[in-house]
Length: 234
Ligand code: ADP
Ligand code: MG
Image (cartoon, rainbow, N blue to C red; front, side, top):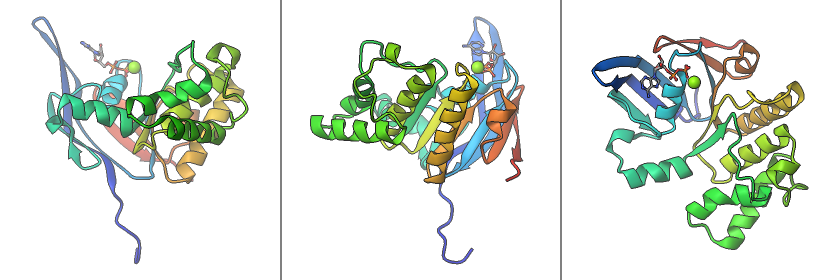
């Protein structure tokens, strides 16, 4: 198209392979995956149990490294980053959302959402302002001082989404984010992802539910450590 910028790759996996070694036994969990996700895309990753989804998620989230092949995140070859640089990437460029929410039970919503900014060294007032803005964004501006136990599952997951967003990451990486939610809360959280993606946010979501995956623009099916893709009809 004339006048539009070329798409910028957020994720590039090139012949990505991951071998686990247990004693003398080797198992190749990822067997040569090529995957590109551009800025602003919404990709769902589906696959049966044992297919390699969590392995792939750990690689994409810089929680684990490839045995061979390459992973470029925002153009940076992850294999060349130091441990310190990797920790910064995890904190600043990736917003994680997990099935189990992973909120700290003793902290209020506000404090939970401020936490990534504490690690990033953001000052107190800015932290508070940004956390309030993120919680307002997910519809919880009136739940700032509630602890997780005082919130429904759907509300807790929305706090987790606010926490993922607050650092303005390059992408949101969500592993079965609706796996513990009832259908109403699932709708709320997926609606939130739709809004975030409409606003240009890059999202990668792992799920085993086709209904959830179909909210994304593309679905990548993982099977036996290999990937096959399909566009989702609009
Ligand atoms: P999924 O998330 O799709 O269920 P995983 O990525 O967890 O799949 O696992 C893919 C394959 O790799 C499975 O056969 C699993 O047994 C194996 N695997 C996963 N983690 C390890 C590990 N730390 N050591 C050895 N094998 C592993
Ligand atoms: Mg898994």
